[in-house]
Length: 263
Image (tube, rainbow, N blue to C red):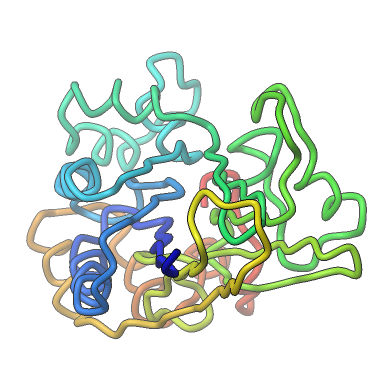
């Protein structure tokens, strides 16, 4: 069997300019399978268009915390910004987002791979790159959210906007895809390419590649300004400088790996 490549994208957050740059890079590489790990909306100005593009092109779409939180009719937290991002979407997209699956399991080159947005228990529980051993092991467990079945040996997730790769002596691998539309530290969009033999439990070559794709972030910021998107200074801080907007508003030194509950 021939090796096959799968592109993993995550955390587009309404940044259509970054998404289109990444999609063009994926197409130029001849990759036709795209899996999306969630957070299509919020923070950026064009969530509606992002949702439509991902519904059109992504073979797998997974629930993110913003996708669950923002369209929630019983959401207790509310402000002008959240209303703007929600109302920029169509009502049919609210339901589509909240109905997305929590996780996706598949096999590649003998590895059992599981993808989800933030952690094995909830899209709202964050596991950062500097996790402890208990948090690490918990990412490979079956939970009520993931369901039963064979436990994974490779886990990929998004949410924190910081890409990393970690492996252990038991041949488990944990990696974070980083963010397409709201990357921290280095604000250049990043995505992951998995390569291996699909649907095979036999040992075979396997790789995980991180790809950075430059784009015109200044033009994206100008679109947000033209559309009247709120929190423009925060958006500029994130997509131009890679500094989380919470640090900007708190007037504190940048702490790139700290996130709020709605990062």
